[in-house]
Structure formats: structure tokens, C-alpha cells
Amino acid sequence: MPSARLVEQPPEVLQLLASSRRVHTACGAGELVWHLWGQTSPQRPPLVLLHGGSGSWTHWQRNIEALVAAGRQLLVPDLPGFGDSALPPAGRDADAMPAPLEQGLQSLLGSTVCELVGFSFGGMVAGLWAQACAQRFSRLVLLAPPGLGRPAIERIRPLAWRHLDDPQARLRIHTHNLRELMLHHEDAVSPLACRLQQLNAERDRLPSRRLARTDVLARALQQLRLPVQLIYGEHDRYYRHQVAEIEAVLRRCAGFVRMQAVAGAGHWVQFEQPQAFHAALAVALDDPALGRQ
Image (tube, rainbow, N blue to C red):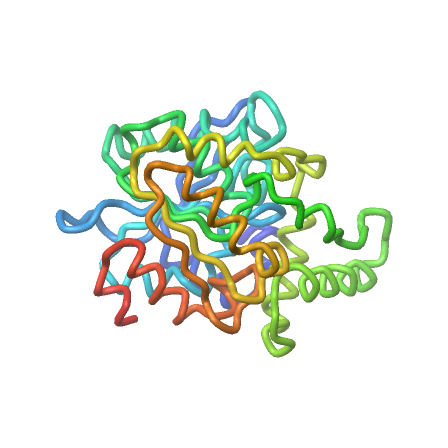
């Protein structure tokens, strides 16, 4: 009998889940949930995908099949305090994530070197994780992360919804926030996108995060020597008016390689323009097979 949490997921999510392997690792008083796709490949290292804030693994809903078809082994967790994962054992922000994530990855893969991709809040987590575990990753790809010391995130505030009891009223607020913060084109604000936004936001148990408004990621990246690349949507409200300033911050990092803009996309770039995102990610990962997806 499927759980209530599974029953409420959209059919597209359930179909993708059916092709995954769900595993659990320790996370404080509970468990960290991982979803695994694909097989080990001697040609390509495993790829770890970290979702954004108020999200879950479903931030990668429109990318997983293409990555698997390109021959990638994927490890996609719900970050501690989000989705189905327990709260982090210590702390309630991005700096609380690397320890349980590394502990979990160690139990799943041992010391295998991986490539790491992090979206938004997950990009900040990815940078802190790579800083803490320098030998774990060979490449870091960031999708429009905060924590670079830029002020745009201060000017964009979502509408509150936690005080509302009516599910439909909540959905209207989630849809508004999705439109304002995450997506550029109106036709991208689909029933699937709205439902994922609602399910993910309402399972966010870390609502008072503050590190995104600091330069914590910029400082971590300055200590990295592995290749670092950044992808963002050309209409991302967090980025579009300060691309030059952000690039200047990244150029102070020894491993910085390039920034790539994806045309026609807002913040949730990999969902709104998946094919163009896959092409950009293929460049970042030097993976021609992905570029053909």
C-alpha cells in the first residue's frame, strides 16, 4: 500500500520514482533519503545533484531521464530538513548539510570521487561540501547559487502562506511565488510545476535560513582548486541585473572556469528549459553524450 506522501505526488513523479532505488543513511535522529538512478560507469564518475531551498529531489524532475540516458549514475538526496529527510543533526542552514551528506555518501560509495551539481540553496551547500571534503569531488557546477555577497535576494520576498488553512488558498500563494521567483514564461507555470512547488514548500522545515544573504559561498570557493562553473537563466531575477558583479566575485576563485546563461529561463533553469540546460551542463561536465539528449 503506497504511503499518503506517495499518493499525493503527481503521476510524472511516481513514474520517475518507480525507476529509482530509494536508500536511507543516518541524519541526526532520523534518516537522509537518497534516490539513485543509473549504473556505475568506468567512463564517467557518479553525479550528485542537490536541490534548491524549499525543494526536494523533484527539482530535477525534468532532467533525470536525460542524465541516465547519457550514461550517468545519479545520487539525488532530499537535503536534511527538506522533502522526506530528517532535520540536520546540528544547525538549521547550509553549513549544517555537508556533514550528514558526506557521511551518507561515504556509506553509499566509500571514497569514490564524484561530480557535484547544486541548484540555488543546494549550490551553496555544494560549495561548502566541496570545501569541507576537498578530495571527494573532481568538478563543481553551480546553478544560480546565493551566498556570493550580492544583494538581489534581499529585494525579492515571497508571499506568506503558513497562516492559511485552506489548501486552495495555499496553492494560489505557491503559484504566485513560483511565477515571481522561479520561472520566466507563463506557460512554464504548469499544473506540474505548481504542484511540485506546493508539495516541496510545505515540507520545508528550515524556514529561517540566513546564510544566503552573506558571502559564505564566495569565501568557500576561494579555497577550492577543483574546476568551478556556474549556469543561470538569463531572466533569473536573482542574477539578471548583476551578472558582471557575480562574475567578478567568481574570478577571484582559483578554480573558476566559466559562467553560462541559458536563454528563456528564470531561476529554476533546469525545469523551465531542460534541453538548453542539458547542453550547458554537457559543456560544464565535458560530456558530449549529455549534449545529445
